[in-house]
Structure formats: C-alpha cells, structure tokens
Length: 227
Image 1: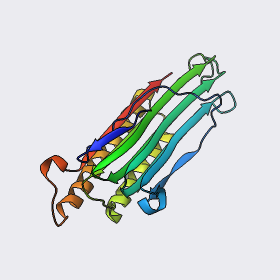
Image 2 (image 1 turned 180 degrees about the vertical axis):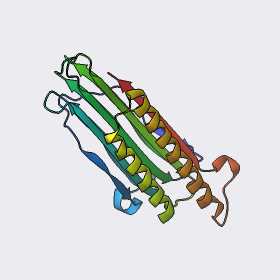
Image 3 (image 1 turned 135 degrees about the vertical axis):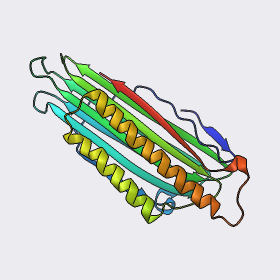
Image 4 (image 1 turned 90 degrees about the vertical axis):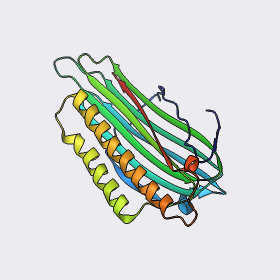
C-alpha cells in the first residue's frame, strides 16, 4: 500500500483488488457511523477500516450484508482508510442455490495542504462448490478533499441516513443481481452529488475562498466482483 502525497487538496488515489480471508462471518445490516475528526483523528492522522462480509451456505442460503460509514476528520496531516466488501457462497446445489451479497459504502472527509493518504478499496466474491449460486461484492469509497475543514450539516446527515436506509432495504429485494448492482450504483450517485453540494457550500461560505485549483474535490472509487 503506497503513501500518496496530496497537494492542493486533491483527492487520494485508491486501488481495487481482491482480498480474501480464510473465514467470512455472516453479517447483518450495517449501521451509519458519523464520526468527527476529534473522535477519530489522533495526532493529525485519520484512520478508518470499514467493510461488509456475507457468507451463504445450505443453512443460510440468502445472505445480504451492508455497511455505511462516515468519517469526518477535519484538518489532518495524513490518513489511512480501508474499505472492503467480501461475499462467499459455499456448498449449495443448483436445485437449492445460495445467494450472497455484500455492499460497503465508506465516506471520508478531510482537509489539509499536503495530506499523505493511504487508501484501499477492495472487493472479493467467490462461489465454492456451489453450483448455480449467485455471489456479489461491491465496495464504494468516497474521499472528500477540501481547502478548509467542514462538517456535514444536519440536513446532509439526514439525507445520508435516508440513503443508508435505502441501501438496507435492498436486503428484502428479490431483484436480479444485475438490478441490485444498478440500484447500488444509483445510491452511490446520490452520495456523490450530496457530498459535492455540501463541500461546495462550505467552501463558498469561507471568508477567504480558495483558488479555483483548490476547490473541494469528491472522488468516488467503485470495485465490484461477482461469483
């Protein structure tokens, strides 16, 4: 994992790839976490590790896991953020197939002149001795880089809560894997639009606006794997 130096408030890079642990835990619906910089950043360094993990097997043939986490760091010198979605289907038959879906949304806001950021966004989906099974893992990582620190307004936080509820509602959907993927993409687009509006409003309200090249930047990284 490389350390990237972010100048002029430009957002971090992130990499997508496959990462698999030996055992996956079957997970329930995620909760929304709204953290401030004071709560999460230590000595000017923000650290976050989030993820969704789903495991389907003959005992639990339809498993959906979602996480939705928001970290607000304010001004930092460095950051290390990791987001991961893992889904696995094991041991089902084509007569009674499994379906395993994991979706993870991670939102990080930070500010600073030269921020060193390690960012990883990972997904992994696998069918193991599972004929006819469907497995989907999607990881979305949103990094907001601003010239000055800002806090999401109560209205923006309420909108994020609504998006999170819509993400959780996918757990009861009987739609196809392709449709679930499209629905998740639509929710990600809503998050991106909300963050762009919120960060732009914060910059506009600053007493000394930054130069155009230092405008707030919202970067979204998306990685999907399907088994």
